[in-house]
Length: 243
Image (cartoon, rainbow, N blue to C red; front, top):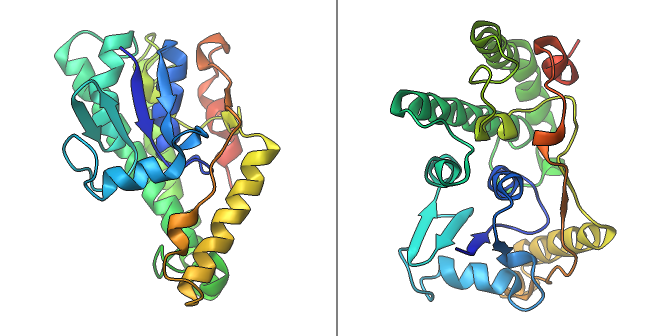
């Protein structure tokens, strides 16, 4: 089966976790919004209900035949067992799903530390509030999340979140590899163009500006996690330590 992944092209975000699972599995897929033939308009048409399939609330979503699946953890819950990235037993699969949902909670709080007023406002427009939110996040919330995953890794005793078994949860878990997806210079140019178009629309210089988003031509490259040596519990978290 050839999958179609729908996610914003110039950011990593929640869609990166699905991309990494597809790449790790060696699955045949199209990153729709990153193709010059279809681009972002294909994604927006889907969100506007102009494509076949059930209506997702927001990207990422995955199209597999006639099936349309949204929400990152939900996508991975369905996708991973089909490609050897999830355990076979139901209790272990639910455990992996629980970890993925916790990672999703973490990601939301990271985002909100930079956008405490709202996602519609640029970071530059909410710096004072962000500084206060980030201080609370790094002092209170971040240690709580990291402490939890440290305890999980210590109890599982195998180097991975599920012990000796590598799973999709490990692809989503941050470690000292740095960003897993490496975008081309063209991707950076497109990201700047998208930001400029969005700002112009907000300032009233063109109500349809968001419909003129450029398309990305270059394919992305992924560093496969399977080929990395298992990281120790301390090493995995070292990059996230903050003074």
